[in-house]
Amino acid sequence: MSTYLYIAAAVLFILGIKRLGKVKTARSGNQVAALGMLVALIGVLVEAKVLDWTMASIALGIGTVIGVLLATRVQMTSMPELVAAFNGLGGAASALVAAVELYDKSKESTLASQDTMVATTVPLSILIGTATLSGSAVAYFKLAGKPFPHPFKGALRNLSHVALVLGIVYASYWSATSMGAEADTAMIVLLVLSTIAGVFLVTPIGGADMPVVVALLNSLSGVAAAASGFVIANQMLIVAGALVGASGLILTQIMCKAMNRSLGNVLIGGVGDGAVAADAREYHNIKKTSSEEVAMLLDGATSCVIVPGYGLAVAQAQHTCANLAKELESRGVDVRYAIHPVAGRMPGHMNVLLAEADVPYDKLWEMERINSEFENTDVVVIVGANDVVNPLAREKTGSPIDGMPILDVDKARTVVMIKRSLSPGYAGCRNPLFDHENTLMVFEDAKAALQGMLDELKEM
Amino acid sequence: MDAATLLFVFVLAAFVGLEIITKVPPTLHTPLMSGSNAISGIAIVGAILALQGEYSTTAQVLGFVAVIFAMVNVVGGFMVTDRMLSMFGSKKKKV
Image (tube, rainbow over all chains, first blue to last red; front, side, top):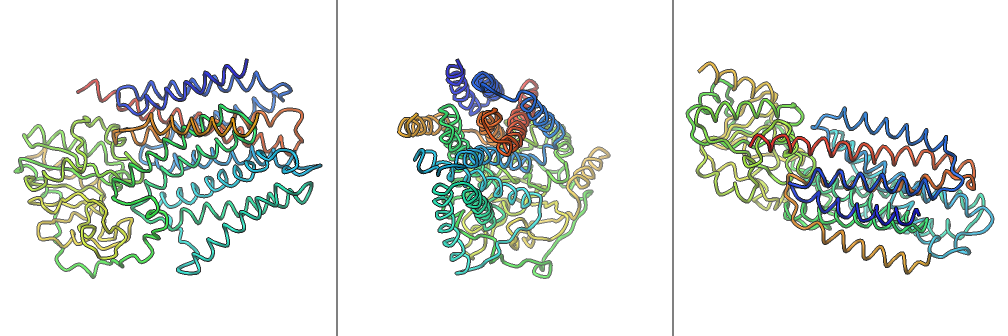
């Protein structure tokens, strides 16, 4: 019985993910996938013969309550952190499933002597699951704006990585070929090393590459689930995990492509280390302006492009931004949004925020489409974006954002940059755009500045 | 079940995963990620099985924690995805 339910669940997952990839069917796709999960849950409750129902209901209840609270309370602006946290929890669950098998089955004989497949996949599942958890934790802190530097630099870093890989291989072998208390010790060593592996995987990845990391961790959480499927010999877990792993990999590739980098380059790059130091003294030609002046400028414009970035998310300014755009449109200004593929901290971050503010989808222009339009744009308003408009990326300077495709806003007649200070962006490098002759700086919080412009416009 | 069969299933499923996601519009990157992320909470099946009587108390405690983690992942993931996608929907009606 449960086998048939598992087959149904696997089919629902496939259909669900497929539908999630199309705008029209996305919402139903998510619901189909959720239904698949429900069917899988019923399947396991049927399969589990001597289940401790009280424990199971309490655990499911606690999980549901926390999940509902997180999902309903979270601000759309902190979606990247939430997805990172969920990734980590999924990875942790997979690792725990493998840990349970290892703990219970290696009491009287070694795993290797019982089943080669289990002996191989248990350490693998612990490794991937735990690394997903610790990697997601680091990503979470990085996304929340807390620095998390790699403890080693240069040759020492490579050496530490080699030592770590050797250690993990040995601990895996050890845990599969020992029993009793020794196997438990081996497992703890493996857990510690796997945790370090996840940290080392994510720490070197620099600022602008964060969306790639979130996508990659998503893929890893799928692989972790598949690995735990091998451990308990459940095909449905393998199917679901492999689906997520593969689709996550595609998403990761799309991200890398958008940034003109290879995945290997992102992972080993060590970007962000040799960051070109940036401080206010390096700028010589800063032109400061006020919301009032910008309002006048916008009123006289025929075309305006808004470039949203992470600052818009932090300031919760998406609604104010949309209102300003509506006011401008009512005055005959053509308003569009330029969306850089990695604007914000996760793929599609800006799309979600602007959708929340009811901005029509056709107003959002992708980078390739809008870049040729900047020459004919009167005013570009950059709201809390920095790295994605940094012209430094077009030059070979060894900066962390070298070669990243950017929005060519400097070609517009006037660029208005709303930014709280001259501090560098997430990638930590100087932005020559601040000094550009056509650039005007508004040193204010994004929401306050946009509201100021809106108020001024309404009085005109 | 033998290892080869499971590996066979894994490889086929991975190919299906690569094929069904081809051109995803940027708007859907975040929902696709959080939706598929919820699916990776499928480890909940393994976690619930670890709550069975044949397992030791320690194992059951670990399983208990695993069920909570996976359930947060599943419920939270699907709900937040739906919340995001519902915003896309409400916008479409106005256009």
